[in-house]
Image (tube, rainbow, N blue to C red):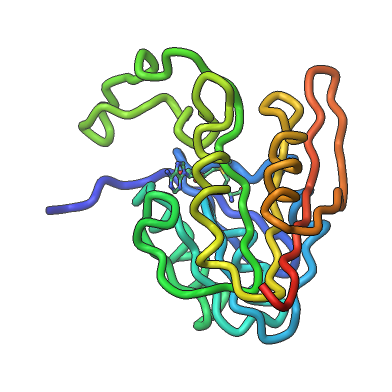
Length: 219
Ligand SMILES: C[S@@+](CC[C@H](N)C(=O)[O-])C[C@H]1O[C@@H](n2cnc3c(N)ncnc32)[C@H](O)[C@@H]1O
């Protein structure tokens, strides 16, 4: 089967030369807030969950990570992330198609997570027939649709990450006032994580935060 052509544009960030396919999440304020507050322990095993273009995970790969897994459930995002790994010569990065942790194996020292987090009612109505791809596609909402309260993926992530985080490991994730990041902080603390707000950005309708959570060494 021949693959449909994709529109593409190129951009540079943090020493990476990246391509973005039309239909893949455009790196935005949330991506940049995580990128600016990202610290990668030397030799870390990193998981970039919901990787999109791969920007965050590839930044980690470039900054001393030993192994990086770029996970997304959108095959187009993974094609884009894979090309980005290749064009930057980052052989320590691999892609995996996975609905959250379903196909992810192993434990990680750092998990990056910029999920779809915006509340959206009746998202099933927002599908259009896409002539170019010859299939029903959502109109770009898959990357930001967090369900009615915005927490559909966040709450699943908080239930599913524990076996994948190494002792002393960290989560570096985005939270939004629109999907109750204080609730995320409470859940992480109740799980025994030490939680810090590493950066924040205010808009007139929303506040986003970069949240860092660390698991104790003995856990
Ligand atoms: C807000 S974008 C973030 C992209 C990138 N990490 C960034 O910061 O620019 C969210 C990404 O989550 C992916 N996604 C949505 N639902 C998912 C799921 N159930 N499992 C894995 N990835 C998912 C989307 O395809 C999209 O690429």
